[in-house]
Amino acid sequence: MKTRTLGELEVPAIGYGAMVLSPGIYGEVDDARGEAAIKAALDAGATHVDTSDAYGPDGHNERLVGRAIKGRRDEVVVATKFGLAVPEGEPSRAHPVGYAFGELHVNAEPRLVRRYAERSLRNLGIDAIDLYYLHYPDPGVPIEDTVAAMAELVRDGLVRHIGLSNVTAGQVRAAHAVHPVTAVQYEWSMWRPIDAELLAATRELGVGIVAWSPLGNGFLTGTVTELGVDDFRHNAPRFSAENLTRNNDRYAPVKDLAALLGITPAQLALAWLLHQDEHVVPIPGSRTPAHIEENLAAADITLHPDTLARIDEALSRFEVSGGTLL
Ligand SMILES: NC(=O)c1ccc[n+]([C@@H]2O[C@H](COP(=O)([O-])OP(=O)(O)OC[C@H]3O[C@@H](n4cnc5c(N)ncnc54)[C@H](OP(=O)(O)O)[C@@H]3O)[C@@H](O)[C@H]2O)c1
Image 1 (cartoon, rainbow, N blue to C red):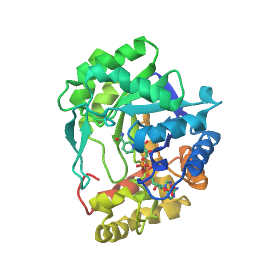
Image 2 (cartoon, helix red, strand yellow):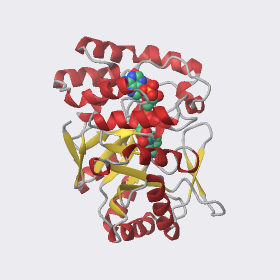
Image 3 (cartoon, rainbow, N blue to C red):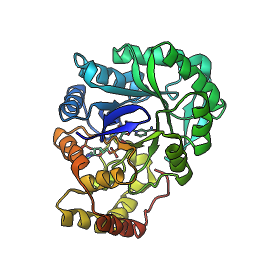
Image 4 (tube, helix red, strand yellow):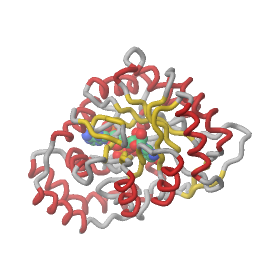
């Protein structure tokens, strides 16, 4: 697969997000299917695998990734995150999010950073994390302090590159002054524009962008018409039965464009993202090898400027029902 650079780290143009492989997120999945999905992603060239200590109970997702990459560690760029899976007995602070449950709880105090990293290394069964992100900034801790503790992990060889997730332009600037930031992970897709100031700051600083939920939690594949029971999207207003029907109707012109181009809506969504910036790397998630291959093929799709203009025009008329945040 074609490659891109995030700061100084070279990765495939499209990576793989493993969150979908933990229970209670996008419905039914078991570990055998999960492990097979990660191996299918690696075999197809998506060797940048994104996980977190907060996906699934008790490091479930990291342990699954660890099992899947066993014996092929050198092929893989392992990215994980910390801050949300707060150790028992430690305090935490609320970070607001758009889901119905309203907030996440974060502790990114410097004194805990090494403990988080060592736990993730154990879960993953590796000696060093290639890209280690602060999952959400802690409202009670200056980001410079958290990043200074992350820099110590780089110094000591536990971590190779530092990332930040869900941050503002100001936060990435402040962090970068303490230690170079390799990537910012941010929700960015056809139905969630990136913050313009954040994009400008990353370009100026030479920081890459990793686009999370690049398929709009599956919506942009055009295949989501109802949700199963064990599915966290029940908490997302955009996926309420009424809004989902409305959003699918309004998204139809974009799907039609994909059909005209002879590609799938998922491929159009990923190719569109790749054309927004040369340092953006989407990390779609899937439990299904056929979907994984379909998604990765988007790395080879070139969209003509006229086509991009038509997509942008269709997107400007795509009024999403259910709030601006998922
Ligand atoms: N930093 C953060 O705060 C944050 C937050 C959320 C996510 N993330 C990262 O971003 C990654 C991706 O995000 P995501 O999993 O939320 O959303 P996504 O990649 O936008 O969508 C995943 C959903 O799309 C479906 N899908 C994928 N390819 C498909 C295809 N070709 N056709 C039909 N359906 C398809 C999957 O179902 P199937 O399994 O059926 O294919 C799954 O339900 C996560 O794994 C995680 O690593 C980070």
